[in-house]
Length: 102
Image 1: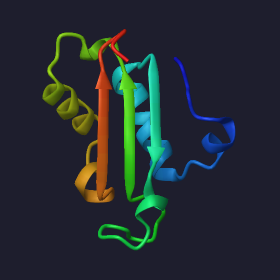
Image 2 (image 1 turned 120 degrees about the vertical axis):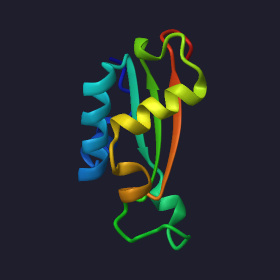
Image 3 (image 1 turned 60 degrees about the vertical axis):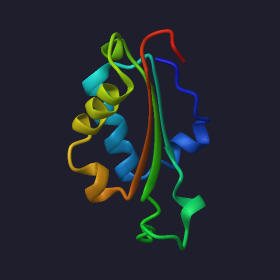
Image 4 (image 1 turned 135 degrees about the horizontal axis):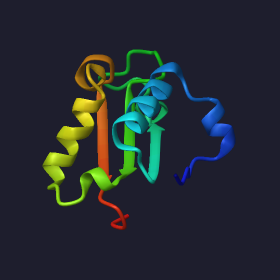
């Protein structure tokens, strides 16, 4: 699997980001996975709960998305993350790709 985040950013991942990465790896065996914490860009905005883990972008590539529409892919990611979207994270942007699309 290609990991595109620099090692120092990976080491600073908070517990929620680590949980998201674990759940997505388990559900999709991705060939590419980036869970990007965008929370600092939203400090003081609506949905910023002060935790430092309120806004994320997920970029994922997996064969599990082959033949699926964009909406189906997003629903699959949301299901895999359980109560995280909407309950524990204020905002989640999802960019899900089939193998070779990214």
